[in-house]
Image 1 (cartoon, rainbow, N blue to C red):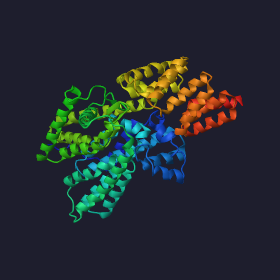
Image 2 (cartoon, rainbow, N blue to C red):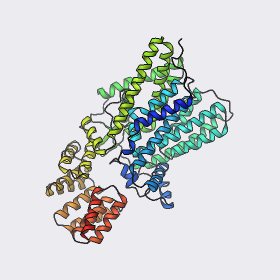
Image 3 (spheres, helix red, strand yellow):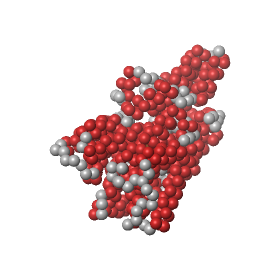
Image 4 (cartoon, rainbow, N blue to C red):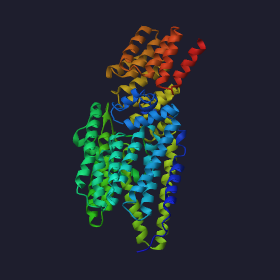
Length: 559
């Protein structure tokens, strides 16, 4: 057996390298904008986070977002908004810092399982720079995954200290951090199962209450799982159990493939073809996963590490598989990059162990070749992540990229069209909404946006017909009310316009689009004071709205 080709660097040098590499990849992140999906609901249109007071603090700890219980995540937004307002740079910078801390925690955690310096260092670097984690870092709405992972990994590090040193305060610290992780996002619920894996891996001092302390983690996990299920009660599931299992298997295989070759990444991956076992995109993943499971079990005869890595991947991915098979208004998604943020650590640990084994078992020449290949792969991943992070800086640019890769996917079409409309580029938006309606003719959202676009390009009657059809599909769809109100203003039917707005406002009194349209209505009849009031109220809920700012400026000029 050959010795390591390079002596162990000092710990501080390894930590410095991880920090420098992570910053090099994500140095452009603070230049990013808000994404036009979920960022509005969670941050700049969310009245819960726009003021730091006792009423809002109480609300974020007693309500959902609307379907997830994430009080610590909302609290982090609230603090940032209080000190920095709607400046997205601060939110992006916080995400990068959290990701960096998570990479360092991965490094600290894996040091408990491997005495070879190369293994924890390489696993942490892979975690820090892999493109599949870019979405989690660059999307402000993915803060809940970053924050929950931070507390999740911190809890595991403290638990490993308890296992190896027997210090009781480490156990209490681990339990406290676990509760913090649950209050950031429910994905941390798998931690008690991971503790069982750690118990199998690490030697420990005997404790008479070893089973009791595991129950201490199990009880809050069950409680928060119940809370999470309450929040999910409004989610619409359109799949049977067998279809859900098939889609989950496809998702797991998909994550394996994307970790190996992280190309054509996207915000979400829509299932277009029928969900049937004999379809190639389902049968092959099922067979591969069965083979991996058999190998993982058989590998315990040679050591526990590979089995630990595969079980880590499976157990930490489990809470997110239900999200991957969620269908809303007919759209079904089988994967999302942020769902593999924690699970990917198991794969990176396994890869680092594999490379370390090759280095030990190879001749000196082969060691040099393996080292060069490893550096090349890591460098390639880092460059890909950096380039992908740049795509995330501008929502329209990102959606244009996604539409080119996945032209049949509904979500990027709608989001890209909305980006064009926001810039008053209605002719460019029209074909994207038309394509979305072709894909999902019974889906109210793209039909409503198509109706507005038709109205804006002068085809008012066609637009009204599309909007009324959208309202028939979904009478609660607020955009349909607002857009139809605008169309009736153009038709000089202000009574009908006000009626629609009154209906919409009764359901969503803090919706900035509704308030902005009231401003348009009042401005048109010369009520400049009322128009100004509505525009200012609209901007208080959406400070990023270019249209509302322009409308307010026009009112102030007219006064």
